[in-house]
Image 1 (cartoon, rainbow over the protein chains, first blue to last red):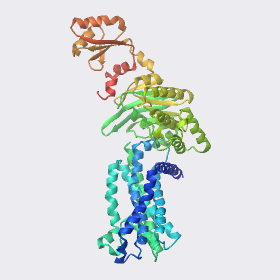
Image 2 (image 1 turned 135 degrees about the vertical axis):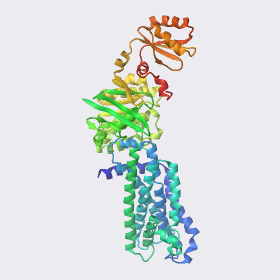
Image 3 (image 1 turned 90 degrees about the vertical axis):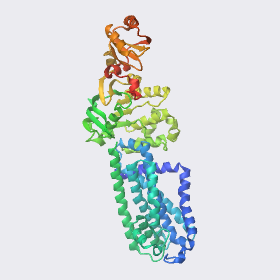
Image 4 (image 1 turned 45 degrees about the vertical axis):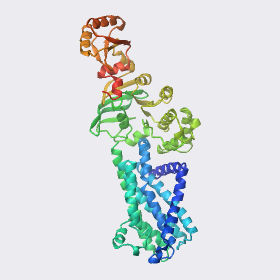
Length: 257
Length: 318
């Protein structure tokens, strides 16, 4: 209970600080739309190749953009931790009885909440572009859930790296290093049948692709709820594992003090 | 009853022995100063007592709780005002205080009233709802202290409370700490590398040098151990050893070397001894650039016990 209460206080603090940076809010809102519009236009005719399950590329793309955006957001989430470490905020909190786990968890929750808000915005823009979610309201919930889970799974990793390296430059390099490869080794932009064989195999082990598939499954016709459930459970387990790893990294950081 | 007991504390950082057997104790309601140059081990000691860092060896108790085994009890009993403040600069003063109170288990009306009261108490009520980024250095330091006090701790740690403050803000902070000690009946452990600060604020103090306590006592006691006056002689040339010999002969053996070409001796009565010292040096042809006499200060105490000049050591020249 203490963990949850403390996490809540710390999430409120981070959210409030974010609201004080109007430029951030604009970026957070506009960037996902840019993805959707740019990619949607660029690859518009690719559905002629077949295997997309729809003739509307933007319908194919929208759920994947939601997940991709939450994935990119997660890779950067460790920057918040580095800021708090640099400004010794974490040290001050450590001299109080505050829950240690809450310090880490609040960063992940803040990151996932941002992803959820962005997911809603992308879905609304997609709706305006003519995208219809085949399973309706339940589908919206699933897409947002997939975004939250992909984000928290990778945010855990990002927090762990932040705590181990404690350097912004290293964080940026790592985020770039893993970001684009994972995007391309997934079905985000292209139908599975159009990918080279080895990439198809590799995509099975890409947690971002799990999220993309779950989200797309509910948007396109022929939804298999079993598939959706399976991928979401995978992501949930992974999120728990990376959060635990990040906590372990936090203990390692504490030992350096 | 002792509020803080420290016994044989040792800590190594990356191959450097930061603390090498530090022991002292602080009575309840006392203002105790840890005085020493930069890098002496003061902050390390406080960080261990505030449960941030772990000791390698030794034992420490704060407010009756073992620092290692009862860390959460210690955290509830202490207020820690670190050297690098750790304020959330994107939050307002009030928000910072509310969060601090909440993780200390306070809430509701009690916390809101406490926070408003504290903002008044440290004199930043007008700026309470502005983000801390807009605060001056002195205001931030006041907020730091308020953060340490929210949950009414029994022991307050002030790590270099006035470093980086201008003289006016420093004087304000001294008044503040004095007021705290009287009104809130707190035990305060403060670290400082300002001799005059320790002299002004501390009921008792310990001088720390290179990870060890050199001497402990009230500022009065410490100064009293240095009977007589200090004679500072700045030599025109570098004939330090010759000068030393002559001074010994006239009964004013130097205790140490001050900054540059300065020798410091201690004599029973400076005014009477000075003419003799100067003529003895002149006879041997040793030029004296300047001379000064001083009543014992903590500077002299430091020099007396460590054989090193405080200011030079503080700048890392030792």
